[in-house]
Image (cartoon, rainbow, N blue to C red):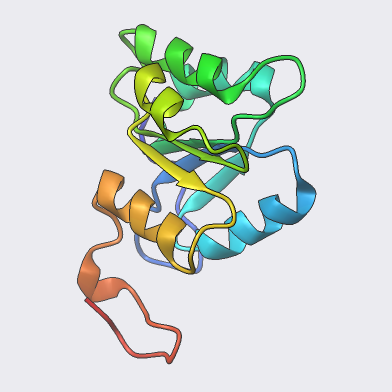
Length: 144
């Protein structure tokens, strides 16, 4: 299956898929708004690994504190599988666990609440998308 999902019919380009595990509905909406340049799909903790295997997302964002498991374990599982170890994982959490995230194999860590623009910048750093000349600043002009 392709690393990219069906294109947004309102655009002429494909948007990279980002899988997100986020238990807080408010934060999920914030993440969706921040990452509007991407094809964002929210999945439950039990669905993350099989969905990542099937869809080959450009990146995964995961909270550490989850019911029934934790984001560190999910990160370890993704990084231990040959078919998913190349997928960048960002642990975006209210738990200050940067060292543990690094040890679990995470490619990035952000503490909630992150500074404005930090999540989009981290995903851009890890995926290389969107190219800098296509990113709009809050004032409406292009930024680099």
